[in-house]
Length: 239
Image 1 (cartoon, one colour):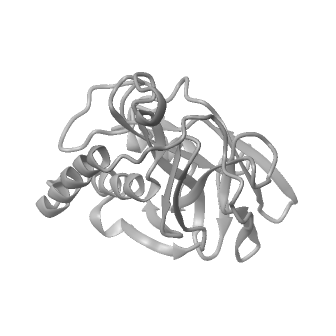
Image 2 (cartoon, helix red, strand yellow; image 1 turned 90 degrees about the vertical axis):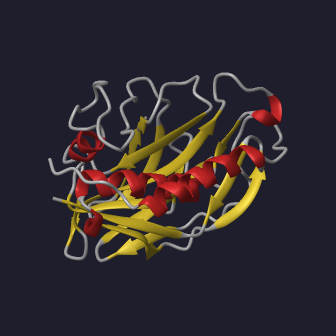
Image 3 (tube, one colour; image 1 turned 180 degrees about the vertical axis):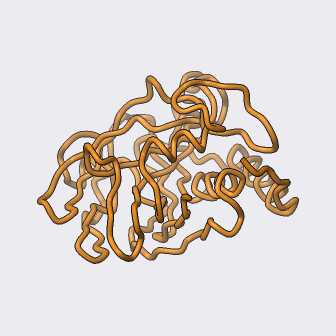
């Protein structure tokens, strides 16, 4: 696998954003639950449709939303291929992190969320626990989940090739925080971090930040969730 140093300006920007994440932590209500204010809709590309958010359970309603879809792995992607590559080729097992990236090496026991889609054969659900950069207990852990029809574990259309869709977020003090000091969210920041990691694994020219206008943007806090998403998804080409 080709390894390279990443843009120093991006590293600096990420460090500044990480500091801001702590300094600007809002007073989020600590009650568990999802938002009641989302506008639920599906996004279409050729014959495929998928909901613009994933859900806590197999129920597509605004009281059950988890996170906005904000990343698409395309060209020749499938779920296992993406997860293996993003973990330095170690698949679902934890391995030593190398080079200038963290990698997403933790995911065997993460809580599963649910995505609803129709790839031309009718609506169906998929679920995924996703992968994290670190185990629970670290102050800020980056977490992504990806979804696709089973058993192929990938979509296909002529626009995006073989692809999967996903969500990103940060878990802040998930196991150590209490009350307003414990939250999940900041998807836009988490999407940028995933793009930074993906440059290492797939190449700088294969990562297009905010390429696809899904239209699911919002910026607010509620019930331990910090929704921060501009409504545009990154497109990452997998080879």
